[in-house]
Amino acid sequence: MRRRIGTSIVIGLIICLSVVVDCNEISAQSKDELQQEIEELEKEQLELKEQEKEIQNDKSSTEQKIEENLTKQDTVQGQIKSLEQELTNTQNSINAKQGEIDSTNKEIDDLTAKINDLTQQIEQLKNEIEALLERIDEREALLTERLRSIQRSGGPMMYLEVILGSKSFSDFISRTAAVNIMMDQDKNIIDSLARDKQEVENKKVAVEDNKVEIEAKRSDVEDKKVALEAQKQELVALQNQLDDQKAERQRLLAQLEKEHEELEEYMFTLEDEQAMIRKQEQALARAREIAENNLNQLSDSTTVNSSSFIWPAAGYRSSNYGVRVDPITYQQSFHLGVDISAPTGTPVYASTNGVAVRGNLSGTYGNHILVVTKIDGVDYTTLYAHLNGFAVGDGEVVTQGQIIGYVGSTGRSTGPHLHFEVHKGGWKGFYPPNSNNVNPLNYLP
Ligand SMILES: [Zn+2]
Image 1 (cartoon, rainbow, N blue to C red):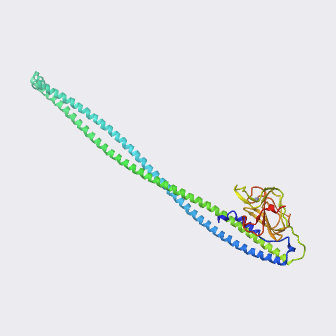
Image 2 (image 1 turned 180 degrees about the vertical axis):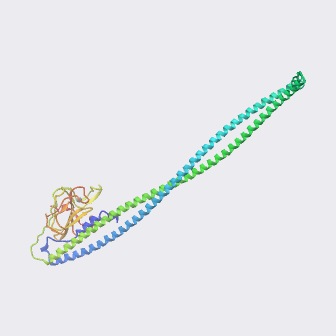
Image 3 (image 1 turned 30 degrees about the horizontal axis):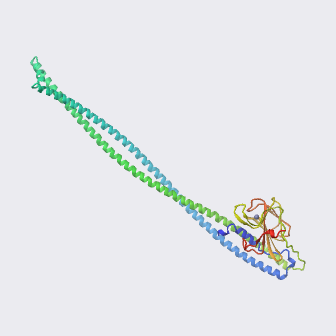
């Protein structure tokens, strides 16, 4: 199939050139010759029908391929859409996971702050305990000192002195009471300090318990955070995988779109080719009509035979027949004729006598005319392409030098010029050596 793209238009054109019409030798032909010519034309018409069938088949299979391609494109587009939906879902999950991670981070920060606070409290309580212990020690030292001094003086001397210094009984009673009170007070102070110390120690234990609890909680939250991070990593991996799948589907879609474009282009080529074959059928019918007419009017008048070609337009020859660098693709290609550069509207003359067949706006040749003739018993077809306009009707009999159209730049052309081809004999293929396409310079004066 690919083989035909780009060449089939021209092949289609050249097929047309095998039409055999003899406009110059009407009276020179014998009845037998005309009969033979009519038979040949019938044969060619049958061959054309075959070709048309082939093109029709090719068109059908291309249409089917286009259908299949479009179905595949739909499928792939659907896949891309669902991958995009999955990607959106995954992104949402990642965002949600990140939100959870952020809130666990905040929780960890809060718990850490609490732990720091508790550590500080514990430190403070330790200091308080220290201070209380110091005071207890001081108080105990004081009491011990008092007792020691009583013992050193052989009994509770201080107390006795206090007591014996009494001036009266009532004084004695009150002094004794005072000594008791003093000793009780010392004892009470120590007891109260010990109670305070116990209280602070209890408080410290409670705070330490609380700290342990909060540290355990923070450890749980940290574990939870690690789990969340792992889940997030899984989601990110899934996202990457989906991204890869999407990219792969997109590549496939681009490939299908390119294939579709090529199929459509090929379809246009086939349609061009089909149109050319129909033109050719018309030309054959016209040629048969002329041949049958001639058979009917066979006379003995003299031969009017122009066996030469004339230049089809005045102008500068900008490109020759043969291998050249294509002016559009810049690649080496075979140029099938000569280009005559001339301003738009310059007259184009029939290079030979013959039957003119018109072709409208082919992708390659634009507006073009084929002139089909027979010279010295050989079929020739000349082709005049990229015309701006026509000066003859389709199927009109033309004479050498007659204006048949005007120079233009229609079809595959980069500027106004006439592309002129000569085909000698029936069509035998597109490229040399099979093609009958010949160098026009060998025929032009
Ligand atoms: Zn050309």
